[in-house]
Length: 322
Image (cartoon, rainbow, N blue to C red; front, top):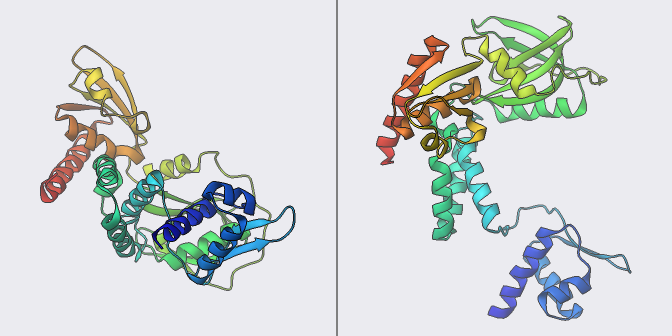
């Protein structure tokens, strides 16, 4: 029985790893006969796994989609990726997703071996998106509706509230959803204003029925994340920052990764860190982790913002014993 159960798990792992397998290939991988493979496939079906079989020379076995979600098998890297993704989702700003993510993460961590817990712990210690509490929650139904309209190239009608609370009616040709600074934005062509606009998703109230299909236009920028960040920067967030760290370049380089900003040596005892609006929390984290003095060279008014972020992070780490 133990041998059969282990073989079933191995068979399930193989079916999840590749789209289609021939019976001969599966038999060779499992060290059994094709007849045993057929029996094991039947056992998986009894457990709720929809395994499709196609007869003939070019046929084989394929794991399909069923009415319910059966348990999944994950390798080490996949388990780490899922755990980190759940931690990030817990602070995504999508209403209801945070609690669900925490529950799923608790189930996953309960069965993780110690070696993977250590990897996830290290990644979590250097993952800054968890530092900021989302200031606005988005109904996941609204996000689904917006994403569907983008996918189907269908015009959207909605009421939109600006930062002052004033509501207007909009008809747009939606292009993409972008998440930055823990907020969701819709990039769309505003039909009445005849121009591209960026809308905060938490301020959108869909007003179906929506309009007809449209022919997608060329996007306003190749990098939509940067495009949205520039729009956000006009609301009081700097497009970029330059900070002098009072620490040798070699020491800072062990902490600051290339995805977090550009680091360059200045003197034997100082280095410069350049970063953008979307990574200011990252900069604050590095300043705290290095435990060094810093100077904001541009823009100067950013000093208090980074100090505030650093202080918030310090308090958060004190509460969690980090």
